[in-house]
Image 1 (cartoon, helix red, strand yellow):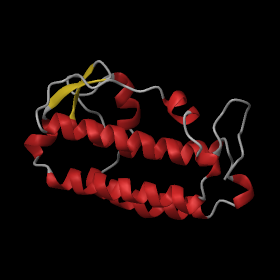
Image 2: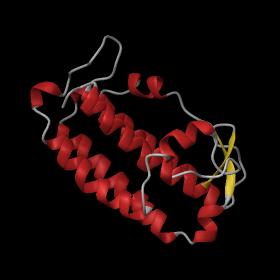
Image 3: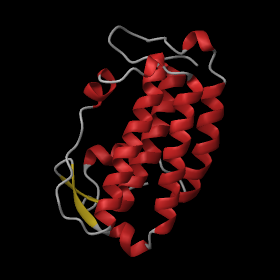
Image 4: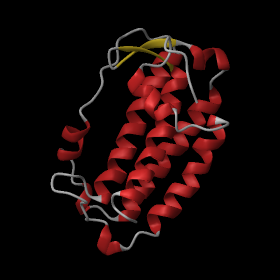
Length: 168
């Protein structure tokens, strides 16, 4: 979906473009489809990297959860009219600071499920006015609703990468 540049910087638009139809429905459907998809990946593939220096599948799962947690938190702050600039984060540093590979798949998925349920509850609790509020995240003006679209689109993007590059 295209969002006006006044509420969505180009980097965010890349992920928002993955959103088709109702955002709330997409967030909810991804909860089931993503978890089902990940559970079908053979255990012996979970530590696979498609190229040197790339993340393992377990690290991708953890990264998706971290990103969702951070972006939904930013969406909450903006919806509550917090005008404090919200910094971005360096995803590679976040993954390097974890031990996602030592965790069980179910542990990673349990955390993702909890975070996604929280994201859905937050999104559904906000009024349209609250979703349209703007603030500063990653040094760019962005609306709360775009951050939720980022969450859904980011996950869709990583599913595409898993299918194309990891071939799972």
